[in-house]
Amino acid sequence: PILLSRIILFIKRKQQNNTITMSKFEGILMGMGNPLLDISANVPQEVLDKYGVKLDSAILAEDLHQPVYAELIEKYSPQFIAGGATQNSIRVAQWMLKDNKGQTAFMGSVGNDDDYCKTLEKCATTDGVLVHYMKDETTPTGTCACLIKDGERALIANLAAANNFKPSHLETDKAKELIASAKYYYIAGFFLTVSVESLVQVAEHAVAENKAFCLNLSAPFIVDFFGDQLATALSYADYLFGNESEAEAFAKKHDLGDDLKEVALKVSNMPGKKNDKRKRMVVFTQGSKSTIVAYDGKVTEYAVTPLAKELLVDTNGAGDAFVGGFLSQLVQDKAVQECVEAGHWAARAIIQTSGTQLPASCDFQA
Image (cartoon, rainbow, N blue to C red; front, side, top):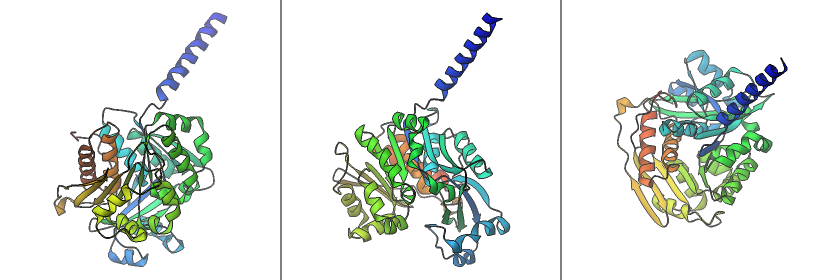
């Protein structure tokens, strides 16, 4: 009996060790941001007017916006889709990495044991992303109202638990494991409203280890109202993403002119970059117009293949998908043109679906 019990104990320990080994993150890309459950619905113009939002905008919910979530559920038969800009980009990147399983991870804060949290976690895990959420015991998981009209969208984000991410979460063993393994880090500007300290901690590691740190402007309101936080983050950025409205807002705030190609070049050369071993690449998307890339004193434009209007379902998630596609090739050391083309392909795929919903298989050909 003693020998048998020792054998059983040995087997159990062996199984535990195997489980730990199998679950250890050895991937290359880590994201950190605001995990939100999208409540997405097609709405008439009067709903946009009622809540004072415009298409192609993203704002944080104030008191006047709080009723929108219940209104969408009660009147407009919404879809519930896993969202949050950074998490979406990481999901798309993993999807496009296809057979390269277990290459991505994500951290953010959610509510504990509510349906929204479970939906988010299931979606990300199903898509192959290792999530290490901080669980907030007192606040529900964040949501985002996605108001869709004629294929365009307006976003109203209620961060809730996502707003409560703490640097202490980065001290957990699993967080340390994710940060240590990754070679590329991606954080959207939306996170600057939550925990700049956490961003800096990850970014400092990237600088110290000469790893790539990627940032997104995310929305004009980030540029306009979180300028100091954005300046801090930008000093670490080896790759900066943004769309034309965000680029225009940044140019206006910093008096960089109206020509977005010149703006991209100026931003790529802005002084104060922390890691002088890497030059900054700036990538500005412009919807169906050419994507602008500025790097090492040069500006290149990459044409976007037009999509027939009748195929357009929902532009929500297009920018996130572009970044995910771009990163999926960047982490494989592909050329910039290949990264941009992958971004275009991903955005094109996503705008033909509602929200960032990914098919079971990815037919992207590099």
